[in-house]
Structure formats: C-alpha cells, structure tokens
Amino acid sequence: MLRSVQGIVLRSMDYGEGNKIVSLLTLELGKVSVMARGAKKVKSRHSAVTQLFTYGDFVFFKNSGQMGTLSNAEIIDAHHALREDLHMSAYSSYLAEMADRMLGDEEGSGYVFEQLKAGLTAIEERKDMQIIVHLFEMKMFELAGYLPVTDACVSCGAADGLAAFSSMLGGVLCRRCLYKDAQALAVGEGTLKLLKLFPRMDLRRLGAIAVKPETKEQLKLCMRAYMDTHIGINWKSRGFIEQMEKYGIGE
Image 1 (cartoon, rainbow, N blue to C red):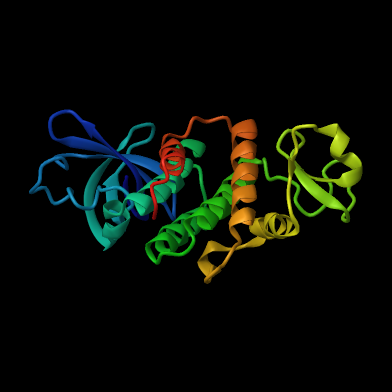
Image 2 (cartoon, helix red, strand yellow; image 1 turned 60 degrees about the horizontal axis):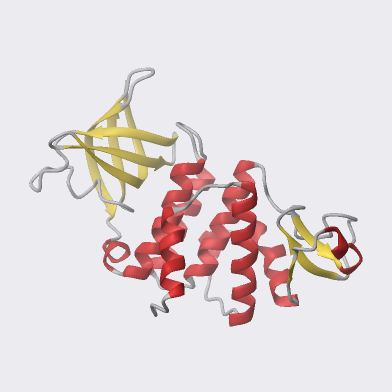
C-alpha cells in the first residue's frame, strides 16, 4: 500500500552498505519506520531528507506486517541549525529520543506530532530550551498515563500550602503531608506555578518566557526525578546534556 505522510525524522540508522532505516513521527500514522535505500550515498536523492530533525513529506510503500520502503520525499524544513549548534542539537535530540523510545509502531497522534514540530521550531528560534524540554516531557507523561498531579496535594487533595514535589508519590505535596516522602524536593512558588501550568501549555503558543535560575534548577530536579522514577529509560541525549552542565559548557 502506498502511504503519503508528513513526518519528522526521529532517528536515522545505517543499514547495510548504502541504506538507512529511518524512524519518523508522522502526522497521520504516528511513529513509523521506513527503509531508505541508497540514502547513505552522498548523491542519493534521499540523503538530505533522512537527516535527523528533518521535517518533510514522505511517500512509502508498506505491506501489512512489514517495514515500509521510502519511495519519494520532499523537505519542508531541514532544520540545519539544530544539527550545527551543539546545544540545540543536544536538546533537540532529547525531544526526538523521547518520541522515538516512548512510542511504539503506529503509536502517537496528530497532537504529539504538532508538539514535537513546535518544540523543534522553538529551539531553532532560540527560546528557552530547558523549558521547551519540560513542556514536551509533560506531553509524553500524559501520553504514557503518568501525568503528575500538580494542581493539588497528591496525598490529601488540598490546594493550599503546597511546598514540595514527590516523584515517588506522583505530584506535589502540601506542608501537612511532607512526612509521607522524606525525599520530596522542596519547591518555591514560581516552580509550583509552572508545574501547574505545564500540562495545559501548548508548545505552538509558546512565546518569550523568562524564568529565574533557581526556579529552573528546581524544575530540572523535579522533572528528571519524575522521569527516572516513572519512565525509567536511560536517555542517551539527556546524559549528554548533563555532561555539558557538569563541565560548564556554556551556551
């Protein structure tokens, strides 16, 4: 069957002497994998369109139960800058890796596709990359059924006196319930406000956003702890981001 989709390249892996297997997040079908024959060759018409982060129109043949074979493709947005800048490449890779590893074959939705597309565009526009990542993490938590409780105490349901985030219990805690998780992370008002806002924010509508350094640090600790507790994937791209942070590689 011939399929025509809009897609974003999540992963491109060499296969054999001249081919590539490409993982795409598509608007119409969710995540799909296709064989791009000859794409490793510099002069191949599929060489450019199979590069990481590329957004394009893809046409492929696919029989039931088999991997598709790329027939034709046209670039809509090559996202060259995302591959050429170290920091943009690292954060964009994390978005792509989340989509690739948290979605099965033909899983996903038009909404997830649009969020990834908007996230990559926002990174290229040099909006706050850490905030973009956290917003997309929230979208993936929701898709996986692990969205944290951020608008009330996850233990007692109180909406006031919120003071900490418990990755173990799955959301924010009020002061009266802090004893239930000694490892809960203390968070300030700014962090609580953003944690509450993130699940409802649409990356397509993300404008310029200024977040205090201490708030960003608290957000990072909360989101990484929650990801590790409930998803449990060893993220290659996040590990690279953490190495850049450790050695103070500036943006």
